[in-house]
Length: 609
Image (cartoon, rainbow, N blue to C red):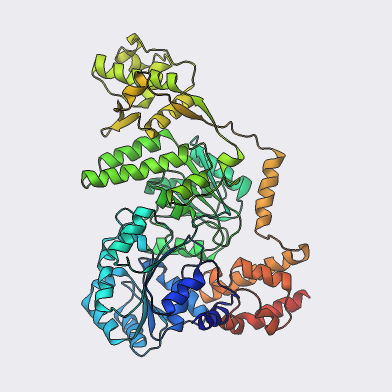
């Protein structure tokens, strides 16, 4: 089977060799085995089911929740000469009938289905009448309630094995803790399948987490100094945040578009298409955007609000740098994020176990934000993987100091205690900080808070530092948020601090480094990464190839990466092949693409010669 699979890889996809575990996974599925695959975004998961579907007799049925992207996925496969189709709710009756006819007559290699279609009896009967090569369950974490993207429709997929016991199944996800991994295996009845767990490390992504301080301006500075003209994704929690941020970026000359569920379908589709098909577009979105997005040259992912879980954060940041070139994952995070998330958990529907699960997710996310150790070590540890400091995240590049915050913690907790005991009152962080700083604001005077013994005992720290203390006390479980107004209350653990039985270590925010020549050199180095390893004479040719690709993509109405990835264009620009034979040896140029685009590329190269 390996030789068939390898020939398929070279002929159809234009690659010389498999990466990582791909070969073992493909060999196992081609031989009829079930597999559960955990592999990071950009690790080449799709080849793990596409090649077995092409090698085995019959049609590979791919279950995917990504209705909005099925058209692009199918277009990308057809560009490779693969006979692919999809069935989902966006099609009219005639289109569906045509795909069904192709499936029954064996004219398809791959058929993409939304999971809800498998709950329709007519779809099951259709599949009974054709020959199925395998079932691929993509984004398999959707089956797990421990995961961050649970979809009830996925639960029915366990029935595939009962109805078609002889058809191999491969379930794939880019994100799963050990708990989620176990739940996927149980719910999909894949305990006896072979499990393949690749490293979750994405060494080309630089993880950075910054305290919030006028977030949009911070974002704009990041874009201007390091990512000018780059494609990127900016995540916001609310639709209003999305709209306002996209407008702010556009006013400041960034080509930015919004994306959230409140926009009409046509606008959403148009904005997604612009992001996928044009170079340098920034999409500002809620987390509804991005799963399955196969754009290889996303240079940064920015979060303006705290993600609800490490899994969600990992998957969203993983959309950066799928081509392996240097990319940035940047998150701005503040006290209000923590208060808001805690409030949302308290008010969420579901039982106590569900709320405990959400709180555990948030605690892990806060631990990642507050760590003074390497971010990557902490991130990988969450997925059960041991590693050493990476030297490429903010805590490695600018190590944070810790300080003994026990007295500061005692002062703050004492103020919360006095308000509760002496006044039977609860307040948010702002009022308590004003009391500690001895500020005679209207609200302080109105409540006689200037008469409390804790009034003015905290002047050694500024407002921003106190907010950092509160944030970390919340993260360490020494304070809790209560009620819809986000008031602060003590926890059981607070008593240990007030009773001097527990030391509190706090992270000191590193001073913001001044923009130096080194900073601009780093920015220039990042820019140079786009044309990494290119000899000087090949740079102009690479840019002309990109312009040709953009024009071709527009003409065909497909994303640019469907034609060729940047990595392939770089290799063409460097090697400057003069014949179809030479061009065919370039990585990413398979038979179908050679036939479609070969003459055009050679003509362009001849002009340059």
